[in-house]
Image (cartoon, rainbow, N blue to C red):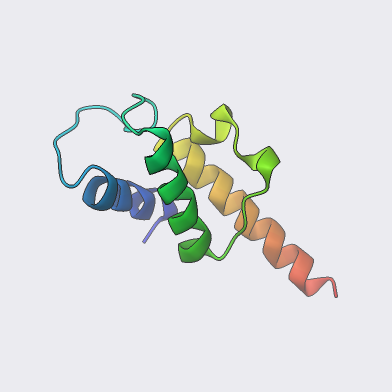
Length: 85
């Protein structure tokens, strides 16, 4: 399953509890700060990455697609680092 789809499903089922929405919940500002914290915790666990304080910026959370792209890039970077040692 693609990263974007996994993130969207988590947001819809766990953070929006299935509430209907017509726009990207991140782009539309649907999530409050506590929901974003929960999302970060889930993303870290689900994708085995760690957010640095510098990663928590508006551009990484501008949309589900932007967050997925960030997660994929972070995962690729982590894989590259683990093979260097």
